[in-house]
Length: 284
Image (tube, rainbow, N blue to C red; front, side, top):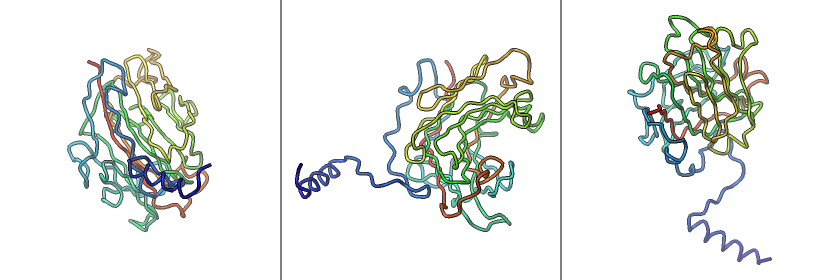
């Protein structure tokens, strides 16, 4: 075994040469270590796809208004947060999207956070959605990447169709969930179609959460591993409303009907949800 002084010197040299020198477990509210280089698009998907929408979040500050809109206020699911578009809650920083949930008194709520979407900005029918993200954790957190039909205001939910690409609740931190909700299959009547996969430390590392949407099926992946498929049964809109355009949402909820089932750990705020990139592809 080498003397401790020689070992320490070697570590210093390795760090100076650019090796990663990580400390202990990162808390939910701390800044992330620099993500590994963004994978090139061609390395992430099979041939035959064309990039049609992307955001790499390279310009610090407010998000690009041509790409993103915001939900504001209280929206759904008995959640505890008030959604805002303030920079305290949502911004581009360090080459990433940061959605920050804060414990603070605001508009008669005890927490704030953000939910962004492409409604009216970019809406599409079929394709691949790919989001590289690092999740917050701790009781009460509920980050998601999901989609809704653009006809939601006309036909309502769940008739518009919902595709959940990624959901995670902080009290079950290793479990990543995917689901679809339609008139025939949804959680309010206990018939939703869903699947779960275990992911190592999603609060410590970036993972690629992806979905491929075809006329005959929807496939969901984590880091290239497919773990959920929902097939078009060919029996109409009650089961397959996914023949109409949808839009993308990315949000961090606090508490609520699922995320709040084991309470909210107030000692872990602020929570930060980091997104390295968002990319949407369509087949050539």
